[in-house]
Amino acid sequence: MNYRPLESQVLLELHKFENKVNGIIIPDGVGEAKWYGIIKAFGSKCETDLKVGDKVIYSVYGARELDKDKLIVVNIDDLLCVVED
Image (tube, rainbow, N blue to C red; front, side, top):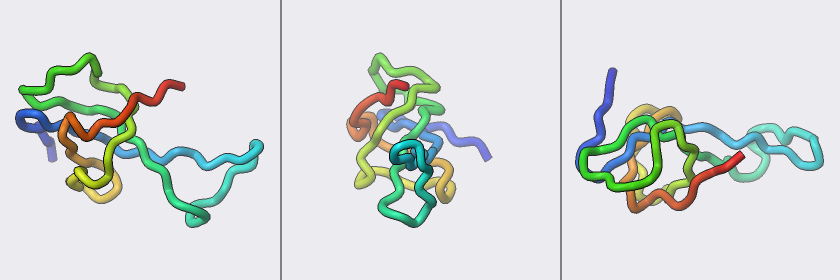
């Protein structure tokens, strides 16, 4: 199924941060899972310097799930910051 966000919405593919402490990988279920999104598409009214493929942190309160733990839609204003490696 294909999704095309409308107006000021952004489609994100969800990814989990790898939990590492001093080089030791912490297994899932220990502590809170931390997610980020990779931008897959923008709605027609999104005016931003972001681009498809950027990693972003988003507000979880505004997110709407499309595909469990895979795709969400958020308003452009709910993007909080860019993740730079």
